[in-house]
Image 1: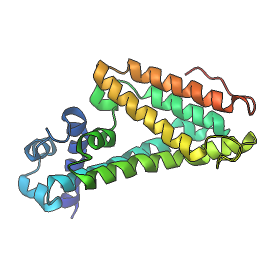
Image 2: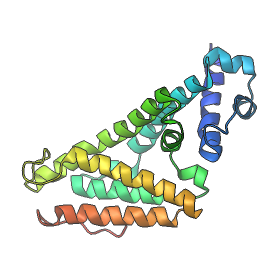
Image 3: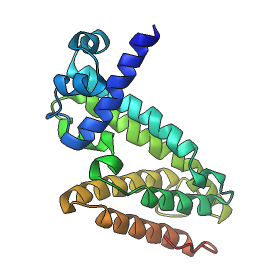
Image 4: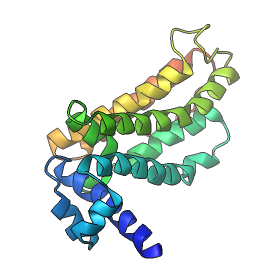
Length: 212
Protein backbone atom coordinates (compact mmCIF):
# COMPACT_ATOMS: atom_id res chain seq x y z
CA UNK A 1 0.00 0.00 0.00
CA UNK A 2 2.77 2.47 0.89
CA UNK A 3 4.45 1.89 -2.47
CA UNK A 4 1.19 2.74 -4.27
CA UNK A 5 0.62 5.90 -2.21
CA UNK A 6 4.20 7.01 -2.78
CA UNK A 7 3.84 6.65 -6.56
CA UNK A 8 0.72 8.83 -6.53
CA UNK A 9 2.38 11.48 -4.37
CA UNK A 10 5.45 11.47 -6.60
CA UNK A 11 3.30 12.04 -9.67
CA UNK A 12 1.46 14.91 -7.98
CA UNK A 13 4.70 16.52 -6.85
CA UNK A 14 6.05 16.15 -10.38
CA UNK A 15 2.92 17.81 -11.76
CA UNK A 16 3.36 20.79 -9.45
CA UNK A 17 6.92 21.33 -10.66
CA UNK A 18 6.50 20.62 -14.36
CA UNK A 19 3.15 22.31 -14.96
CA UNK A 20 4.37 25.50 -13.29
CA UNK A 21 7.38 25.39 -15.60
CA UNK A 22 5.86 24.23 -18.90
CA UNK A 23 2.10 24.63 -18.57
CA UNK A 24 -0.53 21.90 -18.48
CA UNK A 25 -0.87 21.32 -22.23
CA UNK A 26 2.89 21.00 -22.77
CA UNK A 27 3.29 18.58 -19.86
CA UNK A 28 3.03 15.01 -21.08
CA UNK A 29 2.33 11.81 -19.21
CA UNK A 30 5.85 10.74 -20.17
CA UNK A 31 7.24 13.91 -18.56
CA UNK A 32 5.39 13.19 -15.34
CA UNK A 33 6.40 9.54 -15.22
CA UNK A 34 10.04 10.37 -15.88
CA UNK A 35 10.14 13.04 -13.20
CA UNK A 36 8.35 10.84 -10.68
CA UNK A 37 10.37 7.75 -11.54
CA UNK A 38 7.29 5.62 -12.17
CA UNK A 39 5.88 3.69 -15.11
CA UNK A 40 2.96 4.66 -17.32
CA UNK A 41 1.14 1.72 -15.84
CA UNK A 42 1.51 3.32 -12.41
CA UNK A 43 0.24 6.62 -13.78
CA UNK A 44 -2.93 5.14 -15.24
CA UNK A 45 -3.43 3.03 -12.13
CA UNK A 46 -3.85 6.24 -10.13
CA UNK A 47 -5.24 8.59 -12.79
CA UNK A 48 -7.51 7.38 -15.59
CA UNK A 49 -6.64 10.45 -17.66
CA UNK A 50 -4.44 13.51 -17.73
CA UNK A 51 -7.50 15.55 -16.77
CA UNK A 52 -7.93 13.45 -13.63
CA UNK A 53 -4.29 14.16 -12.82
CA UNK A 54 -4.94 17.89 -13.24
CA UNK A 55 -7.89 17.81 -10.83
CA UNK A 56 -5.87 15.87 -8.27
CA UNK A 57 -2.89 18.20 -8.70
CA UNK A 58 -5.08 21.21 -7.90
CA UNK A 59 -6.35 19.50 -4.76
CA UNK A 60 -2.80 18.46 -3.82
CA UNK A 61 -1.62 22.05 -4.29
CA UNK A 62 -4.42 23.34 -2.10
CA UNK A 63 -3.52 20.97 0.75
CA UNK A 64 0.21 21.62 0.44
CA UNK A 65 -0.08 25.39 0.40
CA UNK A 66 -2.63 25.31 3.23
CA UNK A 67 0.03 23.71 5.40
CA UNK A 68 2.56 26.35 4.31
CA UNK A 69 0.26 29.23 5.23
CA UNK A 70 -0.85 27.59 8.48
CA UNK A 71 2.79 27.56 9.64
CA UNK A 72 3.68 31.03 8.30
CA UNK A 73 4.90 33.75 10.70
CA UNK A 74 1.86 35.98 10.19
CA UNK A 75 -0.27 33.41 12.01
CA UNK A 76 1.41 34.44 15.27
CA UNK A 77 0.32 38.10 14.99
CA UNK A 78 -2.55 38.91 17.35
CA UNK A 79 -4.01 42.16 16.00
CA UNK A 80 -6.14 41.16 12.97
CA UNK A 81 -5.18 44.13 10.79
CA UNK A 82 -1.51 43.71 11.59
CA UNK A 83 -1.98 40.01 10.82
CA UNK A 84 -3.47 40.82 7.41
CA UNK A 85 -0.60 43.18 6.62
CA UNK A 86 1.87 40.53 7.81
CA UNK A 87 0.17 38.05 5.46
CA UNK A 88 0.79 40.43 2.56
CA UNK A 89 4.43 40.85 3.61
CA UNK A 90 4.75 37.07 3.67
CA UNK A 91 3.28 36.82 0.17
CA UNK A 92 5.79 39.43 -0.97
CA UNK A 93 8.72 37.70 0.75
CA UNK A 94 8.09 34.41 -1.04
CA UNK A 95 8.19 36.07 -4.47
CA UNK A 96 11.73 34.89 -5.04
CA UNK A 97 13.70 32.53 -7.24
CA UNK A 98 12.71 31.20 -10.64
CA UNK A 99 9.21 31.95 -11.94
CA UNK A 100 8.19 28.32 -11.66
CA UNK A 101 9.19 28.35 -7.99
CA UNK A 102 6.87 31.11 -6.81
CA UNK A 103 4.00 31.28 -9.31
CA UNK A 104 0.73 29.53 -8.57
CA UNK A 105 -0.03 26.09 -9.98
CA UNK A 106 -3.81 26.49 -9.88
CA UNK A 107 -3.69 29.98 -11.39
CA UNK A 108 -1.44 28.68 -14.16
CA UNK A 109 -3.75 25.78 -14.96
CA UNK A 110 -6.94 27.81 -14.67
CA UNK A 111 -5.80 30.38 -17.25
CA UNK A 112 -4.89 27.61 -19.65
CA UNK A 113 -7.62 24.99 -19.31
CA UNK A 114 -10.79 26.83 -18.25
CA UNK A 115 -12.59 26.09 -21.53
CA UNK A 116 -11.19 22.67 -22.41
CA UNK A 117 -11.12 20.99 -19.00
CA UNK A 118 -13.98 22.32 -16.84
CA UNK A 119 -13.29 19.83 -14.04
CA UNK A 120 -9.74 21.11 -13.67
CA UNK A 121 -10.96 24.71 -13.87
CA UNK A 122 -13.47 24.05 -11.09
CA UNK A 123 -10.82 22.42 -8.89
CA UNK A 124 -8.45 25.35 -9.46
CA UNK A 125 -11.16 27.89 -8.69
CA UNK A 126 -12.01 26.02 -5.51
CA UNK A 127 -8.36 26.08 -4.42
CA UNK A 128 -8.10 29.84 -4.88
CA UNK A 129 -11.47 30.53 -3.28
CA UNK A 130 -10.66 28.28 -0.33
CA UNK A 131 -7.47 30.19 0.36
CA UNK A 132 -9.32 33.50 0.10
CA UNK A 133 -11.82 32.17 2.65
CA UNK A 134 -9.01 31.73 5.18
CA UNK A 135 -8.44 35.50 5.05
CA UNK A 136 -12.04 36.46 5.75
CA UNK A 137 -11.93 35.95 9.54
CA UNK A 138 -8.94 38.24 10.03
CA UNK A 139 -10.41 40.88 7.70
CA UNK A 140 -13.76 40.66 9.47
CA UNK A 141 -12.08 40.92 12.87
CA UNK A 142 -10.07 43.94 11.72
CA UNK A 143 -13.25 45.61 10.50
CA UNK A 144 -15.12 44.92 13.74
CA UNK A 145 -12.22 46.24 15.81
CA UNK A 146 -12.50 49.52 13.95
CA UNK A 147 -16.26 49.81 14.04
CA UNK A 148 -16.91 48.52 10.52
CA UNK A 149 -19.46 45.91 9.46
CA UNK A 150 -17.79 42.95 7.66
CA UNK A 151 -20.96 42.55 5.62
CA UNK A 152 -20.63 46.03 4.12
CA UNK A 153 -23.44 47.85 5.98
CA UNK A 154 -21.03 50.60 7.08
CA UNK A 155 -18.82 50.56 3.99
CA UNK A 156 -19.02 49.94 0.25
CA UNK A 157 -16.83 46.84 0.63
CA UNK A 158 -17.01 43.54 2.53
CA UNK A 159 -14.58 41.18 4.22
CA UNK A 160 -15.28 38.50 1.62
CA UNK A 161 -14.84 40.98 -1.23
CA UNK A 162 -11.45 42.14 0.04
CA UNK A 163 -10.34 38.54 0.55
CA UNK A 164 -11.15 37.70 -3.07
CA UNK A 165 -9.64 40.97 -4.33
CA UNK A 166 -6.34 40.10 -2.65
CA UNK A 167 -6.18 36.90 -4.67
CA UNK A 168 -7.12 38.71 -7.88
CA UNK A 169 -4.14 41.02 -7.35
CA UNK A 170 -1.80 38.15 -6.54
CA UNK A 171 -2.85 36.06 -9.54
CA UNK A 172 -2.47 39.09 -11.79
CA UNK A 173 0.95 39.72 -10.27
CA UNK A 174 2.01 36.19 -11.20
CA UNK A 175 0.91 36.76 -14.80
CA UNK A 176 2.84 40.01 -15.08
CA UNK A 177 5.89 38.39 -13.48
CA UNK A 178 5.80 35.80 -16.25
CA UNK A 179 5.49 38.53 -18.85
CA UNK A 180 8.37 40.56 -17.44
CA UNK A 181 10.56 37.56 -16.67
CA UNK A 182 11.01 38.23 -12.97
CA UNK A 183 9.39 38.95 -9.60
CA UNK A 184 9.97 42.72 -9.38
CA UNK A 185 6.64 43.71 -10.90
CA UNK A 186 4.83 41.20 -8.69
CA UNK A 187 6.44 42.64 -5.56
CA UNK A 188 5.38 46.11 -6.65
CA UNK A 189 1.80 44.89 -7.09
CA UNK A 190 1.78 43.46 -3.56
CA UNK A 191 3.13 46.78 -2.26
CA UNK A 192 0.22 48.57 -3.94
CA UNK A 193 -2.22 46.07 -2.45
CA UNK A 194 -0.73 46.72 0.97
CA UNK A 195 -1.18 50.47 0.55
CA UNK A 196 -4.76 49.89 -0.57
CA UNK A 197 -5.54 47.84 2.54
CA UNK A 198 -4.09 50.55 4.77
CA UNK A 199 -6.20 53.19 3.04
CA UNK A 200 -9.36 51.14 3.47
CA UNK A 201 -8.85 51.10 7.22
CA UNK A 202 -7.29 54.55 7.58
CA UNK A 203 -10.54 56.40 8.22
CA UNK A 204 -11.67 53.89 10.82
CA UNK A 205 -8.75 54.06 13.23
CA UNK A 206 -5.00 53.81 13.59
CA UNK A 207 -3.41 51.67 10.91
CA UNK A 208 -0.09 49.87 11.43
CA UNK A 209 2.54 51.10 9.02
CA UNK A 210 5.18 48.37 8.71
CA UNK A 211 7.59 48.52 5.81
CA UNK A 212 6.36 46.27 2.97
